[in-house]
Figure 1 (cartoon, rainbow, N blue to C red):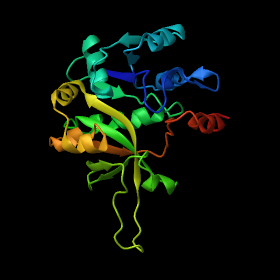
Figure 2 (figure 1 turned 180 degrees about the vertical axis):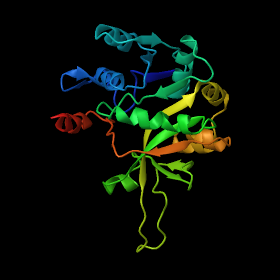
Figure 3 (figure 1 turned 90 degrees about the horizontal axis):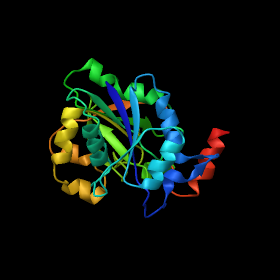
Length: 242
């Protein structure tokens, strides 16, 4: 069974009420929900929130929402709490969907969970996109990822990685899209771990996995998934919808 969970919170230092902001006439959370529902591999889609305004908005458009604790450390903790509420089994696959990427391609969910069928030892996967916009290489808003020859993550950073010491060196750079899939059994282990020092510095919760010696399979997708960080980003996304 594959369950998609969209963690969603109202409060944000950069964009208060972002999930309910309108994108071409629909709330952002509704657009993300509808894109997720288009996936052929997802059995159930759930919005996990601690805010009644978001909960009511999801119920109003016919979606499924659950109320989680307001003291969750991160979106991952909110996803794990939802998995417990749904009584999922240890081998069920849980997909963590970013709530601020309203035009992502549903095919990326198929790509994201494909490693679990290929290798029973996989416990977690994520997505990366080869950067084509040079601005994203150095913009700390866009998280970069490097990976080994077997496609497992080496590091995630807001900085430029790898860094070309010699200017004439050419390299490919990959942007982390922030979608995750986990086995329920591993997700339980992950949320029980303390915050790692690199995670604390970079403010990237996926680093906790690497810091404690676990592996994340990185799936390269041909589909970018632009996010909305600030109110002014909405116009850019609406232009892509047109």
